[in-house]
Image: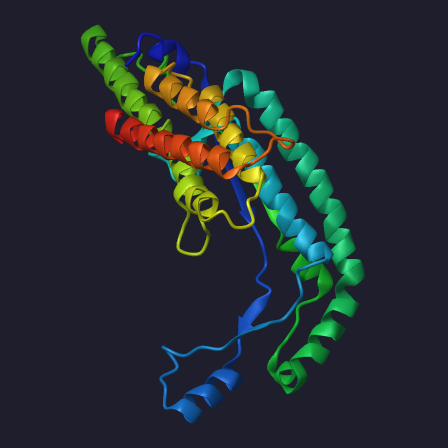
Length: 300
């Protein structure tokens, strides 16, 4: 494991927090809950009825939610999550301007979408009342401006995560100052190493899937409705892991090579015969094993 450039990498990092808020488009309906519990002999704490108050799909509300997610994803492409500070991420100094532009552009677009929400609001509420029927009588809708204002994003720069400067340690003996610097560097090294595991975990989620989403390996193995973007997603994960390998860890280089090899020669025009697909699935499974072994090798 190459760690010779740890200090230079640490000293080129800045901590940043991206935050977002969004209004709920559903509420707990007390009347419907009481009715369901009474009819079925259930307790309110175990049987709750939530109803959709405002439609998101195809509306400015949906566009606002999508924009916030897009901004977050764009920042994540050049950042590694800090495991010791909730919500914070490491960003290299060279990418600070880029991240700030992402945020500023997003904030301007969000302000425009907020105005669109206000314009659509009367129609959205009217449609919701019609859809809910009698259930609408117990629901209070906020004003459009109040609802729209709940979509918000924030970006907080927290400064460098590692460097303990001489000015901070003035008045402390040289020996103690050296020990403090060494301890600080060691703790950030450990946190940064753990952070390198984040894009690998994202990759494994893509390959293995979740309880509600089929993973790439299972989707390709069944041979039903093969989605070409699955292969593109693997390429994107490989590129992200490569670009975020700030510590130049050879284990990550090996993983990237395995990922690239697993989709080599497969593009939008390629013929996906059973033999081609079976070979690709075998390589992707091998890449998954490399990813899991990489996490183990890094101790994370």
